[in-house]
Image (cartoon, rainbow, N blue to C red; front, side, top):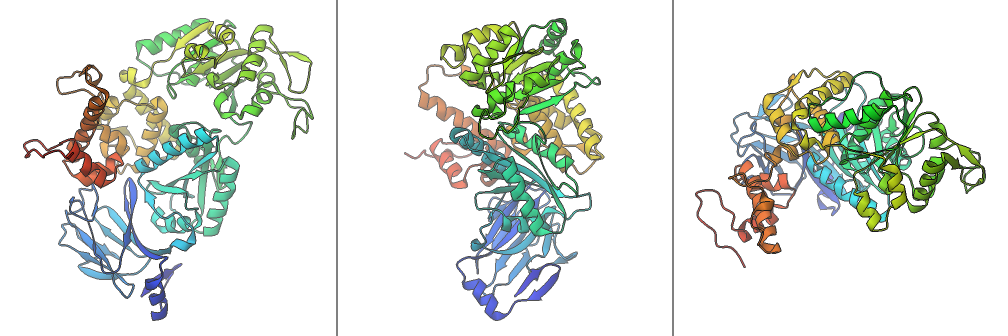
Length: 608
């Protein structure tokens, strides 16, 4: 048996091979790397595993460069692994040579079509993360972990990792080394050709930073750098965490190999003077009206309340107001009210005296004092706890603050711009937001339209985001193909502009040529296809069958979702299940229960 040790290939003794074969903890894996993710395949002695794009293959990959049954891997009883070509069109290649059947060493690579396969041996006893997810699967894991972290009030780390410089080794060279050093609860996926993404539960930024520095230090070569974000400090949604981690990774270098966001200041606080270049790109009448309203109010001092979905551009509008105002030369400080621990909200906003609480070793100014003469932007103002709401109301009424631990009032000259995606009026009715504070904040209310309400803006926004991303990375991508732009316009964008930005940046990582194509876009976006959720006659689903009972309507909605996914996968159940994030057996069961069938197929009797 052959195993790989660093750069040297060495022979394993028969005794070691027998120990590996008999150990209940040993396992041999094949990692299959595609352009948009990776798949882990576990081998069992004597059981061949067929790779191809046919639903009958043991591992079905949606890749046109593969034959229907392209190649197979077989783990022998003696512990060796054999790869065999199954008469494929594009061939199976090992070491740059086309092969028909060959024993492959651990750590060696095989290529078929655009897929790269590498063989590894690991043990369950090593405590590492055992599988590599696809990007879309990891996003579902991240969304679920965010819900859990919010419910239990726990931190959650997220990171992007890549080799330093452009000539770094591809992930398949160092992912197994990373996996061995991760915890079983950590999840990894391939974000792009040279980038890994990680979900790190139960770690805040500082903990994740120390942990990942130890991980990459343990590998040594290639030199890896990492960008770290965490919830709630860096953001409360998957898109916010991805954006923060990517921005951090771009700032990492050989001196500071692990960078976190925010790199300075208190949790959830960002400070800057507004940029005087560029502008808000829009052709949408509602967005133009919002901008004009803010420009007319720029010279006044009344509070402004921006209402809109997460990621729709509320902070961009706040910065536009800042730039248009007489306060443009003073700071605008942004505070994410939901990202600050409840016990530190008042100290963060208003400052504290020495000895006011454990750890308050010196007097500290808060956000309002630091923003003197400028603007304080309170993002997600609906997340403020009751005590902070009362203190904020007093600031609005008296223009004075009191540091925590003091009784002395200090005058402040700031303008407050607040933003929320919540219904503050409903929160007032529920007793979760002060009515008198709402009256003070909503002196001027501006509604920010969501991106799906601005379809005419999607193409120019996409091109601007592409230009900004290529300026940062130096990637030689010139434009977005018309089919890809059409898909971007059809998508519903629940994460708004932030989600669009992340989609363009990831497509930039995956693109082969000088343009972004449909296949470069995230799979969940492509799978959504025409997300207007309407029937063939164009009638919205919500308006169909209003008299149906709840169970019937849920079954119908589910049937439509599954049918659309199957149609887009050409009724390949394995591919549809993977895109939906469902186990194959669950999809097969639902096809039977819901009596789904391919057009012109023989009807199936539904099970009871």
